[in-house]
Length: 99
Length: 293
Image (cartoon, rainbow over all chains, first blue to last red; front, side):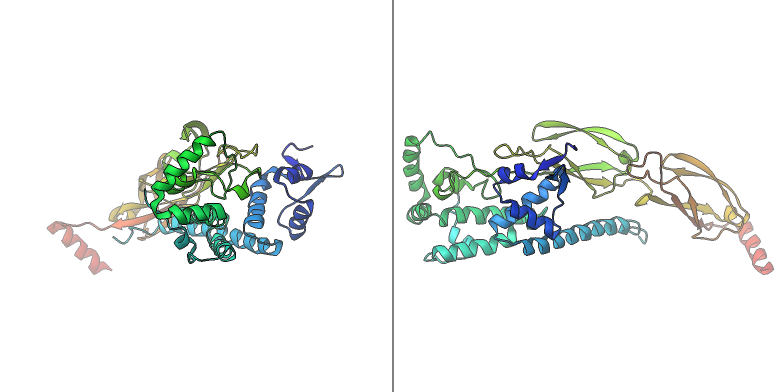
């Protein structure tokens, strides 16, 4: 079994959350569940995002649909920031040329 | 130490009900929550203020004390010091986004501890992600090299792959803040700021450079030596080369990130320099050429 997988049962007790919450996130496509030998896991790489979802759910009362919208927008914002960075770098090609 | 007006921070009246305070807090928290404002220090600070205000005003005991001693916090501090001496065994362990840092004002009044309503709940969270900037020269990132960074008094050995982009962020797992209540450590996110002090301009993996060409070489052709990032190369100039002509030198550009041995291209633009301060003889010869055309 891949060592970077964490059992969902462990996560539920760790973060004090219901399995139904993880399941709802999975059904919405916000996290991926991996099944190994009838046990459910999530990949370590998703822990940071999962924690964000738990915080927004617990601290701001954001429901699953709200989380879906937020994470789509955050992803879009991230891509736009990367694009802005690439454009800024490209702009340097033309800077000082006309001095 | 400056007095902190928690009512003003939450935008509520002094007579606000618990419900109004909660609603004001939630509204502001939704706006400034760090998870919704990545890499935004201003929002992070604002969120801490809001949390602190909520910490005090949402708890009846703390609110009463704040209302009583608020503007005369020093009196409150004296009162609390006496109280604290009696309760010196008490220590809070709860951390997380909800108010892990407090203002000096809060610390002096409430001793930095959590409200009674939140004691006893110990969620486990991954540690804070640390953000850091690493300033490098373009020449530094032409080759893969190792660096030692000091983050929070810890030395971190880092291999910087050739071809890193300006503004690129890399994540080093587990090198951030310690996890809370046994949670995993946070990550270290390093943003590369790459200063270019060379004559080359970079766009992704390609490099661009302008090369001056004298009039006679551009007209008659010849050979010139050109600087590239990896040394000099000899170039053949075709006769009747025009100003602004571009030449692509394949594989002489910048290393491709995490693709060992692969490089972008070097694009050279020729700037033809016409001679100045002509002698009498040169002028005559140019006039002769003009007549032929």
